[in-house]
Length: 257
Length: 257
Ligand SMILES: Nc1ncnc2c1ncn2[C@@H]1O[C@H](COP(=O)(O)OP(=O)(O)O)[C@@H](O)[C@H]1O
Ligand SMILES: [Mg+2]
Image 1 (cartoon, rainbow over the protein chains, first blue to last red):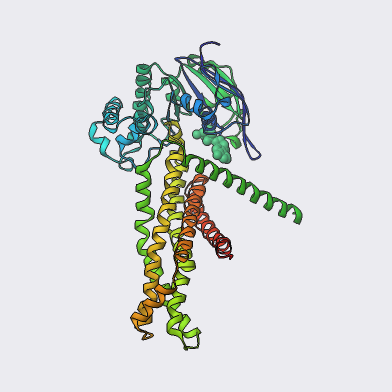
Image 2: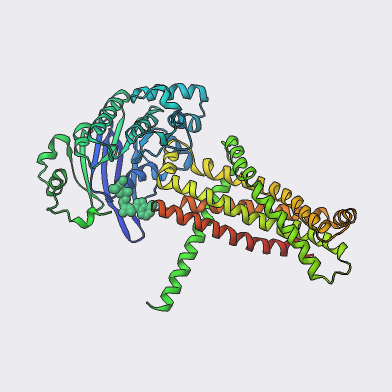
C-alpha cells in the first residue's frame, strides 16, 4: 500500500441522529483516477469534505501521502491542502470577483503571488479550459453553467495540484457540454499527472474519466473495482445503479435526499 | 410531550448555540492578530459599513435630537427650560441615544447584509472553496468585517452626536424660540469629554456585535434560499437585542461612580 496517495480508514460521520458515513474504507492509488458513484444524499460530498478538512469526521483515520491529516495542527494541514485542487458541485465561484480573479485566487491570497503574475497564469489556465482572455474580465453571473464549470476547473488546476477532487462535474449540464467537461478533465489531469477522486452519478462521466470505480451506499463502500468491471460487477446494487432501474435492492427511500 | 422534556430540549439547544457562538468569536478574534492581514478588504468593508450608513444614521440622529428637545420642553414646567433643554439633549444624545439608535439602525442595515452575503456564500459552497484555495474563511471574511465595524461605528456615532445636538438646536431656536448663543453655551458648558467618550466606546462594542452576529448567522445558515432568509432575520434580531443588553451593562459600568 506504499503507493496510496489518499486513504480513508473506517471514517464515520453523523449529523445529529442521521448517520451519513458509516465506516468508509477507500484508497486512491497515486496517479490514478477513482470515481465514487452513489445516489443523491448518500454522503459523497461529505466524504470529500472530510478529506479536505472542511468537515471533521467523528471517527476514523484519513491519510494523505501516508500522513494522518486528522492528527495535524492547522499549519501542517494548510501545507497539505496546498496539494489539493477542487471543483465544486455548483462551481462555487466567488461572485464578487471577476473570472480571472477567481482563477488566480489561490495564487494571490493563498500563495501571496503578485497580481500581475497571477493574472498571466490565470489567463493561461483559462486557455487550457477553452476560454479566451476576454472571459477573464467577466463576472461569474454572466456565464452559462458550462462556462462556470470550465472556470471552476481552471481555478482547481491553477496552482498545479497533485490531487484534484471533482464533485459532480457534469451535473446540470447538457450531454454535449458534459462530454466537453469530461474530456477537459481527462486532458488536464493527464498534463498534471495528478491523482483524482471524483464523485458522480453520471455513467458517461464514469466511463470517460475513471481508472477505478467505487460505489457508496448507506454510508459504506459496497463495491470497488476497475472501470472495465462495472458492467459485470456481479453486484446487484451496482447493476441497479448503472442501469438506472427503479426496481432492485436499492429502495427509493434512500435515493431521496 | 412531557413538559420537562420540552424545557430540557430548549435549554440544551440554547446552550449548544451559546457554545457555538463562543467558539466562533474565539476563532474570529484569534485571527485578528495573526498574519496575513487583508488591509484592502478592511478598507472596502469600512466603506460599505460606515460610509453608506451615514445618511441613515444622520437622519435618525437629527430627528431624535429634535424630538428630545420638544419632550424636555413640554415635560418640564417650561420654567428654566432654556438651560435644561440644551444640556439634556447633549447628554442624552452622546451618552445613550446616539450610540444606541445609531447601533440599531446599522444593525438593521449591516447585520442583515453580512448575513445574507455570507449565508449565500455558505450554501453555494464558496466558503468551502476558500479553504481549498489555502485561504482561511475567518481571516478573509469575518476579520475584515469585524475590524471595519469596530473602527467605523465610533466614527458614525460621533457624526450622529453632532447632528443629534444640531437637531435639538434647530428645534430649540426655531419652534421653541430659544436664543442661539445661550443654547450653544449651555451645550458646551455642560458636555464633558467623558460623555462623548463613553458613547464612542459603546459604539465600538456595538460594531463588534453587529459584525459578529451577521457573520455567525451567515456562516451557519443552511438549506438554500430559505435558510439564508432565516439567517438574515436572526442576525438582525439577535444583534439588536445584544446591543440593548450590552448598552445596559455598559451604562451601569461606565456611570457607576
Ligand atoms: N453540514 C451539514 N449539516 C447537517 N447535515 C448535512 C450537512 N452536510 C450534509 N448533510 C447531510 O448529509 C447527507 C449527505 O449529503 P451529501 O454528502 O451532500 O450528499 P451527496 O451524496 O448528494 O453529495 C444529506 O442528507 C445532507 O442533508
Ligand atoms: Mg454532493
